[in-house]
Image (cartoon, helix red, strand yellow):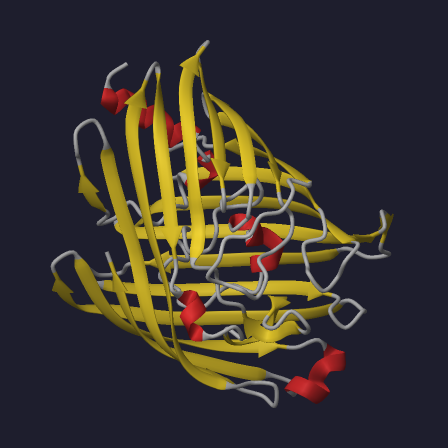
Length: 381
């Protein structure tokens, strides 16, 4: 098999749920050293964040991501090496203010509430081997850290969300396992359908963000993906996640997700949209709780003119961090204008505003309604 065919097979067989939603195709840097094909992409956001209400806060910080992929033919198949890094730990262990957000810990003692945790410096270090056999593409993937077959693409990889500088509230309902310290995945793709099964470490990263952790592979997930047409990707997945939270020992999660992603055009302009639903069922010592914790997301980014991007994200989550189910709603809209290009880097300036609706019994803390805004400088290549 020739190199172009091998790389095309690799792109379609490996993590096919990412194909329509991945945000690294436009403007990716590319090299061809020998038999390798290397691509790289990334972004850096410098953000001033104001979250209103009595539980809000204000902070200036930066979040970032850099990813590189190297592909080449190997024997009768194709090999892909993947690496992804982030300087998020530099913002501090407490992350940044984000009303209604929950998940992980800043100090190993208390939960992060109304704040988004920073991602680890090492976000992915993995390898995948793909082989064409019996009319199908078979692949094996291993990483430390990496992403199991669970949920839609992580928010910083979705074409619909890559330019939005804040993390979605539904991160821990859909794609929080995208940084898993230990994962092995086997998968097959035939025609428009693919099936993947993963064994991985279910524990979320701890408060030490610069290191690599090691844990046992104690959790399992499976994902079915359908890509019926160019730009379209539908997936359904299920995961049994053991002891994900450091501060909730003995509590496991059964997570179900469904998503539909389109990355194409609207009226001749680049447009990407994701609709996703996820549900966390918490279980303590294998005894189910008396309620389910659902979350849904709708996000969309349109480029109405060259160098302009408009986006919207709407979410609804139900969590039980107060030991009772609480439902929160949020809508964010924003706009970005690219104003310069230096070499491979495009510079943009933008802003977003958010309207937030707390659960009724939490209005003492948040008020009847809350609002937030961000202003940011964005560099991407």
